[in-house]
Amino acid sequence: MPSSLLSLLLFLRTSTIFSQSRTLDAPVPWSGRFWARTLCAADHASGHFSCATGDCGSGSVECSSGGAAPPATLAEFTLGGAGGADFFDVSLVDGSNVPVLVVPQGGSGGGYPAGGSCAPTGCLVDLNGIFPPDLRVASPGSGGETAACRSACEAFRTARYCCSGEYGTPGACGPTEYSQFFKNACPRAYSYAYDDATSTFTCPTATTSGYAITFCPSTTSLKSTGYGNQMAGGLPLINDTMSSLLVGSTMSSAAGRWPEGGTPMVRLAVAMTALLLLRHGLP
Ligand SMILES: *[C@@H]1O[C@H](CO)[C@@H](O)[C@H](O)[C@H]1NC(C)=O
Image (cartoon, rainbow, N blue to C red; front, side, top):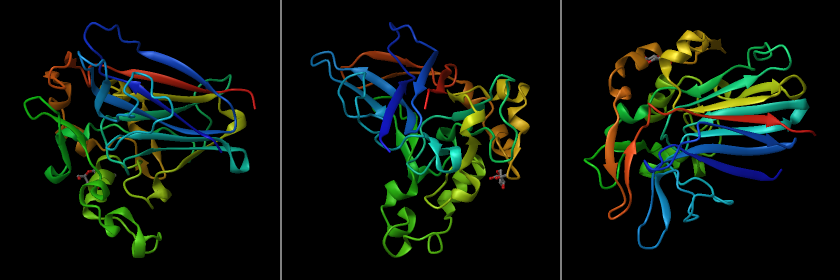
């Protein structure tokens, strides 16, 4: 299946008007992933555009076919897959940069189709404030603010953390202390390569119109809509223990400059929410 790639820009230059919502019609079958790039700027002299996290290497705002440089939180989709179903997940296997929420959209009746595995998923905790220090990626050129969190695989490059080589099977590669940290914070997101059982969600293609993908959703608004208490496979969407640790820290915004000589930016991480509607096109 061809893979399509798209990245949304969350942090833009202050002079740019931010478009908060965008709709994308995907043909069925379709498979691809979405992520956010953060701390982006164009170099004054060369015009070269790059981002501190999730960069796709194109040198311009459009990604073309470039993938995300880790660390980046990924929303992954296969539409119209095996058995007439869509498969989707939010993955921290390549690390994490921003919180992401994926909510299936129902047909004419609204809401999403009932069923345990057809349910919202995501990682709603801004992990940047709380994860293990050896996984931390600092914002370039700023006062040491945290930009993203690497996966243990990327940070240490061992077969054990990457589930490769002798650890290349589900039986040989269980959770680690690092993957467990991600799993505690985001119970429904992929925390390591073989975390399928609690991390893959499925909706019937025929009764699902598409998916709402929200980058940096506000936790309080999620709770008021009832998503916060939603259980799927016995797991909550939000770990209240974790999210209560973060009150205050996630609502701050900070100014940063990056890269050197680049355009000044204001980081509006959590104050800014971006919504992408992925709709089923015609088969
Ligand atoms: C929520 O986080 C706490 C603290 O890390 C952890 O002990 C607990 O198991 C987590 N809950 C879930 C459902 O993952």
